[in-house]
Image 1 (tube, one colour):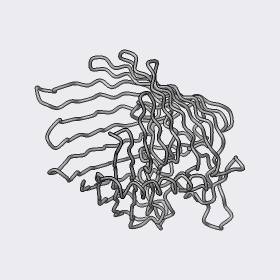
Image 2 (image 1 turned 30 degrees about the vertical axis):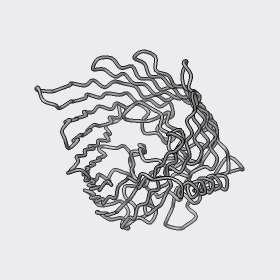
Image 3 (image 1 turned 180 degrees about the vertical axis):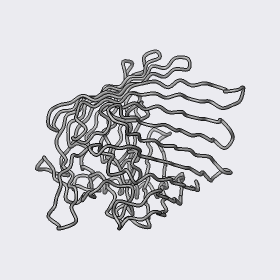
Image 4 (image 1 turned 60 degrees about the horizontal axis):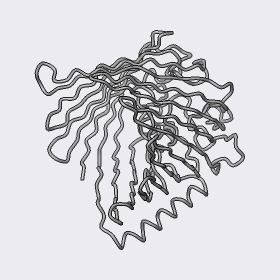
Amino acid sequence: MSGVVGKAFIVFSTLLFAIVAHAVDWRISGFISGQFQGFFEEPLDPIQSDTNLSIATRPEFYTEWNNGLDSFTFTPFARLDQRDDERTHFDIRELNWLHVGRDWELRVGAGIVFWGVTESRHLVDIINQTDLVENIDGEDKLGQPMIDLSLIRDWGTLSFFVLPGFRKRTFPGPEGRPRIHPPVNADAAIFESDAEEEHIDLAVRWSQAIGNWDLGLSHFHGTTRDPRFALDTSVPGRPFLVPIYEQIDQTGLDAQLTFNSWAWKLEAIRRSGQGESFFAATGGFEYTFYGVFESATDIGLVAEYLYDQRPVETRSPFENDVFTGLRFTLNDPQSTEALMGCIFDLDSSSRFCNIEASRRFGDRWVGSLELRTFSSVPRLDPFFTLRNDDYIQFELAYYF
C-alpha cells in the first residue's frame, strides 16, 4: 500500500482488527486457486514464455457486533507466479470498519467500490486502481484507502469519499504475458501533483432507483487511475514505458432501465486534465430469453456501442467500437454460466474476442475458463503489441 497517509489508514485498520480479534467470533471464507495460461503464438519478446502457472489465495475474515450495526472485514490477496515477478504480489483488497446508522453508513479503512452497469467497459468506475497483472479485462482492483460516508434518503443515496494514499496501477514485468511492448516500468511513474502518491482525492456520488430506472451521478477530483505513457530509451536496447499520472476532474453518469426481458444500459463521462477535455460513453442493451426450449437455461443477447472522443493514438482503443455477445446461464445445481463476445473496431478490421465460463464441482470446487484473442489489429491500435498474445486460461479454485 503506497503513500504515508494510505499506510496510516492501514495501520489504523490493522490495530482495530487486532483489538476486535480477541472479543468477537470471526467468519472465515475465501478460496485457494491454481491457474494455467497457454499462449497460441510465439511471443514478441524472446524472454517471454508460451505457458505459465500460478497459485493465488483470497481469504476473507468478517465479524459483526452491536446487533449487526458494526462490522469489520479483512480480505488479503496474494499470488505466486511462475514467470513474472510483478505478478507475484500481495494486496489488501479490504480492511475496514463499517457502521450502519438509521439513515447513514460510515466505512473507514481500505475497500473496493464498484460503479457501473455496462458489460464491455466500465467508464464511471474510478475509485479503485486496476490490478492489471491479474487480468487484462480490468475487472480486478486494488484496495483503496478511504473514508466513505453515505446518507440514505428518500430522494436517493448520497455518498462522499475521501481517498488518501494513491495506488499505482500494476503492470506485467518484462517476462509477463500478455503485456504491451515495450514493458511498463511502474516504479518510474511521474505525477503531475507535487504530493505524488500522498495526494488526497475526493469523490461524490448520488444514486437512486426510480421505477424501472437505476441511476447514478458521480464526480471525481484527484489523480487519474488511467495513466498515459512516455517512452524512456535511457537503457540501450531495453526501452520501457513510464506511466504519467495527472490530476483530473471526471463527471460520470450511469443508468439502467429494466423492463420485461430488456435491460438498457448507459455509462458516460466528461473528463478534463489530460490534455483537452473529452467525452466517452458506452451504451446498449441486454435481452434475455428465459427458459430456452422449455429448459432451465437462460440466454442473454448483449449489444453495446463504445465511443471515446480521444484519437486512438492517445491511448484508448475504444473510440468507435461495437460489442456483441451471448450470456448463457444454465440455472443448474452446478451454477454453470458463460459469456462470449467480441469487440469490433468500426474504423478498422480489428477484433478483440473473449470467452469466460465457470462451473461448480461438488460443494467447494469451481472451475473456470478464459479465452482471449486479438485479430487483424492495425499498427496504430493500442492492442497491436498484444497481437501475438492470444491465450487460454484454466483455473481451479477451492472455496472454504
